[in-house]
Length: 593
Ligand SMILES: Nc1ncnc2c1ncn2[C@@H]1O[C@H](COP(=O)(O)OP(=O)(O)OP(=O)(O)O)[C@@H](O)[C@H]1O
Image (cartoon, rainbow, N blue to C red):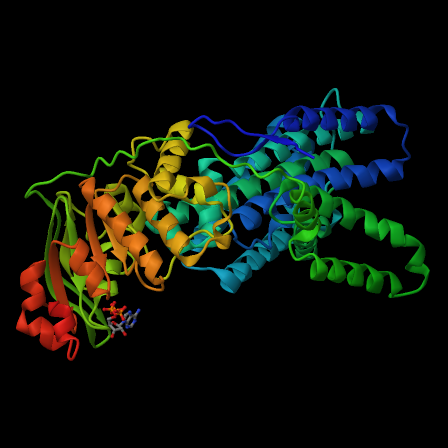
């Protein structure tokens, strides 16, 4: 079965469904028509209304948790904010339904961004606790701010918008909204923002160093998630004409989370499946309610079994099966060249480091180091284990704040800039322990590199793909562009990491032990790759313990020992320096060789 096609243009090589969008539109239209024409009892209408409006809110969790990897246990609070805005806005303030929905969505977005702001300092279980606290605050306000919210009695007689007063047409409206928002969430994944979110989810550190403003990305994810919660809640209020605080409690937030985990957190389809199931299962088991506890036990066991045997959710599981039938798309070689504008030769200084220090308590990991890197060529930073090489690189790329000293890149003082701003200024780097976004394809990884702010192609999607392909071709991996990098060998992962940095067209490329963990043939490939990059004139600063590699590729060497610079100059001279030989104790002859 073949359902995919591919284009050989430079702009896009990802497989696409030929009939995907028209089929989806048709499906939504059919669902809307059925909602209007099929006669329904009030019970069926209510279940359908609940499933549809809940699914909109669950889509929000697909963004914040599925795409961005941030836990949110307050989705019911955002749902409640939207619902109360529509309820109170119409009944107490006489506002139009759509205006109320807009206000509710805006309020939810504001609080969502505020909650996202807490991710600056918090993550993991601390973030979970903050979202739970926010959820509880909203519930308490809804219950106790009686003059405004009407307290536990809730808001009654909430009208629906004109034209959608009838239950069936209102349901069709909810389906249309779900269809549109589901499509947008589906498309979000492959936008620049969606890739940034996935990069943050997979490896936050690498995302920052690749030029992504991690904090802003998380705040955006929370705000978007809250917007969907608010819209879902607003539609819910119109659907049921009544809202009360117990409908938006912490327990409902847990239900929302279970829905998205059950269906599959990575896709809006999973959100819809999970919501549908968790609303339908209790109804199917209703006949068991005569035996106390049995209904809940079976319901709980069903959820646990599904999560246990389908860790990626139901849709994740089904997708895995369906992918077997997919035709493997082998990208046609693009033959694209990889221009590197940071290249060039001369005496111009690219990086100027003065008096750089980094102390960890009493330990002087880097101690008043001076370093000048001139444009073009390869500059190696070497030294025995623990001499401060990686710490220097981490301070240069902004992962550590310098204790003292200044760093100037291309004339710009970057000493106090965060990692993504340094990347914008022209730094590119790789890590000693490879940091790729493992759930993404090679092409997607490298596209994020090409989207580096400051790269001229960053805002042109077709040019980004073309540059990413060219970078992959440069490291001889274009034919594997569509494969997920987790399946790559160590050597190929290193190459993708280098391609990601090259795609950003940096001014200076920092390579932290690129040879570490490579076998001898991979090392040969790496050496050839470094020579090819160097031949383009791009300035490289490399850390490596492999002296053969260093002496073959580097023209200039700086040596650290105990955090201090002990030698600096042309490679041949430095490697013969008595202090350097002494620092390497016993490996002196090899070094000199
Ligand atoms: N986050 C940290 N907290 C405390 N000490 C640290 C930290 N990072 C590094 N160090 C210490 O700083 C010193 C320099 O470490 P660094 O990793 O920079 O050395 P290196 O030259 O890169 O070593 P290697 O070649 O083994 O990677 C070491 O003593 C190390 O233990």
